[in-house]
Image 1: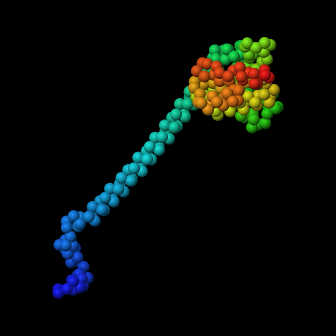
Image 2: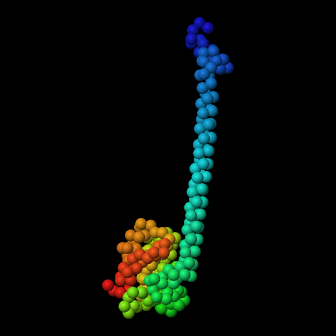
Image 3: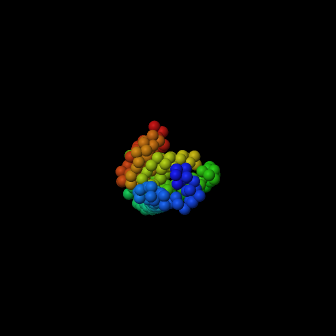
Amino acid sequence: MQSFNELVRSLEQHPEWRSELRRLVLSDELLELPGLVRDLFESHRRAEARLERIEESLAALAEAQRRTADTVGNLKGQMLEHSYREKAASYFGRLIRRPQVVTANDLWDALETTLSSHELDDLLALDLMLRGHPRHVEDPPEVLLAVEVSSIVDSYDVERALRRATLLRKAGYNAVPVVAGEESTRGGESEARRCSVAMLKDGKTFLWEDALSQWCLGK
């Protein structure tokens, strides 16, 4: 071969010579580069697959934790509701004399004739109703406490107690909205204060006078 062009033509005619020429011309590092790139790409692909599986596992774990938290919260709420019902005198005796637990069946005739089916279904979901006369009030009227119970009282609990107390008032009862629980959120406290909803929290009573004045005494 007398020229580079002759070399090129020879390589075109004999493609099997090219790998040997590369071996002679290129360094070992450059020859290994394509394999290294393929290995790197494959490693990256496997790492992405592992990361995707980890993300899926974390998402599943987070969902399981959320469901567990919801279940625990519901169980605590049910236990609290049972406790408030069974120990009504201990919890609510400081607010009303001789508190009596009332069921929807006790009020059924008045409720059915004044409320729509949708309103009646909503009221039936109320956690607890109690009847009695407020303490420390001259010539006190009979009141009906509409109580929503939650382990952690938030603004939604306050809204439900207020809405369902309003339905009881629509049916002709002197209803006072009350929320009860072990703790409360800042939003729940703010909403209770804004709407004059009484709150029982960790054995202590808040906003009872405001709620009683707003809903029953007309002050």
